[in-house]
Image 1 (spheres, rainbow, N blue to C red):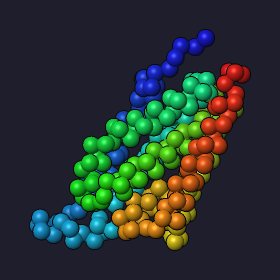
Image 2 (image 1 turned 90 degrees about the horizontal axis):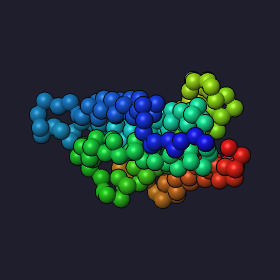
Image 3 (image 1 turned 120 degrees about the vertical axis):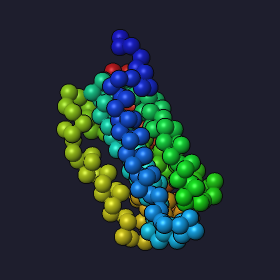
Image 4 (image 1 turned 90 degrees about the vertical axis):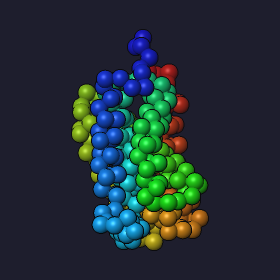
Length: 212
């Protein structure tokens, strides 16, 4: 019987390092460039589009894709894998928390809105991780790039809703929508899609543990 896997080890450490690096870069890029302190709040682009929160949501989703592929390659039992993927995606949220606190100073928002932004990103990351694991299972020995379809699907999910009235459905558009005061119906839809996906993807883990 295989030994219990750790939440983080040498094989899963690299995706977290990449997350921290690129989230830091996104935070630097989100800082408005002004000549005077008094002009800080008048940086139009940074004020209208919260770069960091959009980047963090995207990076957490790609982290989930990588973690799901790694879980399949390691042949972690499905029920255990589901628990580990949940813990790992939440850990990804935790390691970027210092960035989040700084970004909140750049884009002042209520505690409720911040909780919704972080919660949505975590749900999306978990759904991405579970979906990636299932896609990788038939070809366990391949690398994560063996299934480029998962990256294409994730990109479509992030980009297609942006030019529509339901841009908040995209992880890239949710933070901007919340800062702009989006209504509850688009917000409900934004949470329903990844939550339903994660729930459906959990079913195989709950039903087929005995065969592994």
